[in-house]
Each structure stands twice: as structure tokens, then as C-alpha cells.
Amino acid sequence: MNKLVKLMKEAKKPLLIHCKAGADRTSLASALYLYGTHDKQNPQEAISIVYGHFPWLGSKTKAMDESFLLYQQQRRD
Image 1: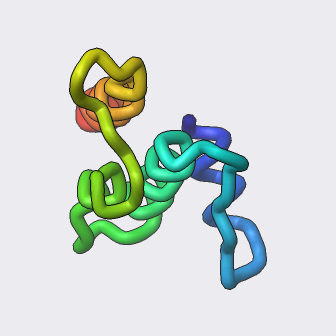
Image 2 (image 1 turned 180 degrees about the horizontal axis):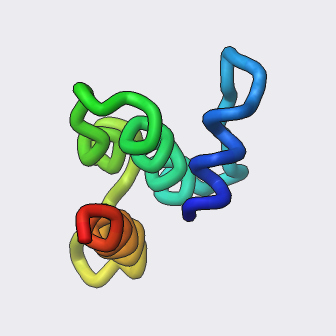
């Protein structure tokens, strides 16, 4: 995740984040970008049903939420 954040920070802007049929992966990448570059925004908002992320009813996509929270915790330590 650190490599992805570094890549997105250094990339020419505007930045398009896209994953074919991957709203959950795109949401995770977007949250990482916001967390790594925009301290004042709430990056968790990028991982949201508003953007097609659906981590309920037994969906395995909850792993995106868990991965992001773990990343945040490790960065704070």
C-alpha cells in the first residue's frame, strides 16, 4: 500500500483510478490516495456504498475496509 500511495503522489495529475468491475478495489485505492495526500479529508468516505462498495451480507469486499483500517493503524504506530 505504501508503494501505491507513493506512486499516486508522484503521478501526473489529474489522476484516474479505475478497476474493471472493481468498485471495492477502486474505493480502497481512492481512500489510500486521500489518506496519503490530503490530511484534512476523511479518506474512509471513499470506501462507501455511495461509490458502489458493498461490504455487507457476507460479501468478501469487507476486506477492503479491514485492509484500510489496518494500514491506518500501522501508519500511526
